[in-house]
Image (tube, rainbow over the protein chains, first blue to last red):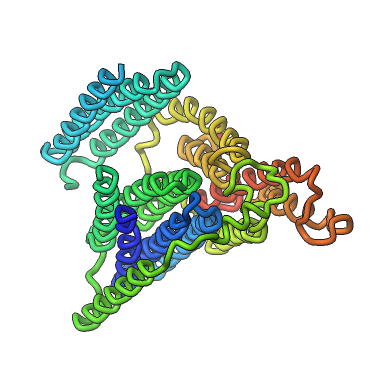
Length: 95
Length: 94
Length: 313
């Protein structure tokens, strides 16, 4: 049990890092990375909690995190498309 | 058999270590690529061989062999592309 | 003891990688570090008894997302402009943000420490309640039996992301391929010929295997999408300005099958997405395959960034 709590600690630190990065990083790509780091911290916390059951890991948090991974990738992909579009428009504006 | 497998795995890990040290310490892209692809392919091969011996099952050994072949192919192509890109961009892009 | 040493090292590496990927000034390095972070996270999921998540993270989180990030980095312009400017916030605001984040992390760690290991979690009850485990695998069964809305709506979210990317009109593949002499080598098509069939088989296997072991529509779909990405990079598939009707149909196939299976059985079963026990396994398999196809196509189109696809060679 004690060995696993390092992951809970890591999850908390990841959330902190992600939040700090989101607030302080100016580049949009970096902000997307920060949001993803934050999200992965949340996923890690859920999975750590899922393991605290006496009889095997709880499948419901697993299912929720699986959904979460797909949603995170979808949102990030959309964000990346917006970042590219912004760069395109800026180039056109410079010409 | 399991002792032999463990020994081979340790050898494989040594190759990984050497490849990593090479990647970190070598001066330019080409020699770094050389270190990573060569040493890590051997390392992965030994790792697969060792795991195959530990599992003591032909089907798992065959799967590990396929994994190794795919990884070697991917590493080769990746190495080729990186080196080629580097060559075309010129060495001054550091 | 050895295991807790392994756990400690993994957790420490996770934190270090996340930190480096966020603070390193070179954008390219940040992205590469993020991909490595994703792979280490996949290892962590495997260690924490979540093999389903390990597969999903390696295929979707590290694989597809890595390709998207690197492609966007490439599309943004010359590598020299990859240096990100320093933060525009004042020093005091940065310190305040750091303190706030540290407080957040401390509170979360404290909360996670306090949560006890309860006797019967929701999942235990759920697995007990499963009327007839049509699939022998708890995560897939829970997803399909109790969290159908999750799966349904996340597929819809994925579709919305694709539509959103279309609206942004920023083709990623054309931006990469346009100024790239490195893919002109014969090695890449050879690799595609070798790997694409393997990836297609592995993807189909993962969907099929989802019924009784780790795997499922999302993992399989991501591997299929990876095959598509490889083919697009090897100039087997190209972008097209228009969406063909077949492509449209395939993209909504998953949602279509899922919703119609849920709706058509409503008169006999009484509620949305309730399946008769005899047919539950068959329906779930059908839904999974349809979902995998739609997910694969959606992820692939997120990568190409253009509405349509066409064969090149």
